[in-house]
Amino acid sequence: MTLIDRIIRPEIRALSAYVVAPAQGMIKLDAMENPFGLPEALRAEVGAALAQADFNRYPPAGADPLRALLCETMQVPAGYDVLLGNGSDELIHLLLQACAKPGAAVLSPSPSFVMVQMSALFNGVHYLDVPLLPDLTLDLNGMLAAIEQHQPALIFLAYPNNPTGTLYTDAQIEAILKAAHGLVVVDEAYRPFAPASWMSRLPEFDNLLVMRTLSKLGLAGIRLGYMAARPGLLSEFDKVRPPYNVNVLTQTAAMVLLRHIDVLDAQASVLRAERGRLVAGLAGLTDVHVYPSAANFLLVRFAASAPALSAGALATEVFLYLKSRGILVKNMSNSHVLLAGCLRITVGSPDENRQLLDALRVAPLAVGS
Image (cartoon, rainbow, N blue to C red; front, side, top):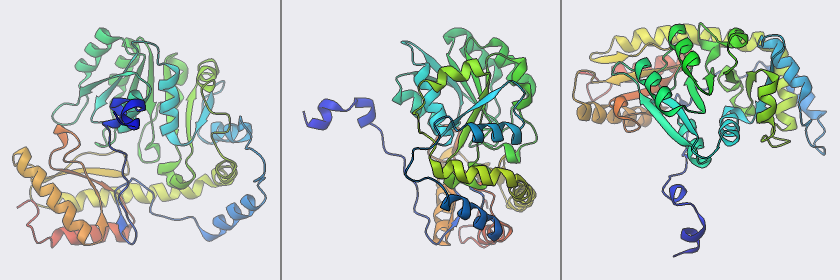
């Protein structure tokens, strides 16, 4: 056996590292990012604040001012607090790490946010999934049966779901919350684009946590996630949080930017309108199905009436064609059996969306014909 064979867990050796596609010089519609930069005046204000930051000191461990500002800005219910993370990825990891008792399980619909399954593997927690229905909506009966059979410690519900854009109904989430033997995490990463939130309903359910990130709001580069819950619950997860997990640059920039939340909200409003225009343009292509989305991306199935294998081949052909035109989207065809023939397309700026639609209309592969 080699050194690696002797010391690295076999399930880790079997994995492939998460790969981020090179995007230099391309129209980047693959990662659900906000395409708009900050106004120059706001950039200058952030720069001035960063220039005054104490680079020689560790950041405030509890980030009390930032947490208070987040609670105020994001309308966290009175008496509730937030725990901060280096993006929501770290918060998912902390949740699973704290709940990783022998035999513990985590439950999620699938396909959904891949980091839940990955973090479960990393932390030795059994991952359970209930496939979505063929129309990519939630299988509530399947979820309730899995809850009763396995009594998972954690249930993750992306709201809206990634990569489908689905917004589960209030009745479905209420049923899961009432049936759950453990905690239910409603991940609202795409809250700026969705018409509903569970934040105000935290006081109704002792087992509810609401997770969000500033990434989709337009601040992906600063990597700040937060999770809202009752303080007694958060204090347990705080025990496994690294003491300086949110660096001084992130804390400083977020303190400035959250005071200008109106700028980011205005950008999100533009993207919501662009989402509607993009839906209309894509729906005009023959044999292309666009799934309803409450996020800043669209799941699009090409050759919707074709067998899965043919649809998958066409989706890959479309993906490669767009890439050759300098447009990067996400090919989901090989990620899950329910996503054969699907590309996930981030809603870009008006000009980026126009270029995407123009490319698809003249594609030399008869898209959807």
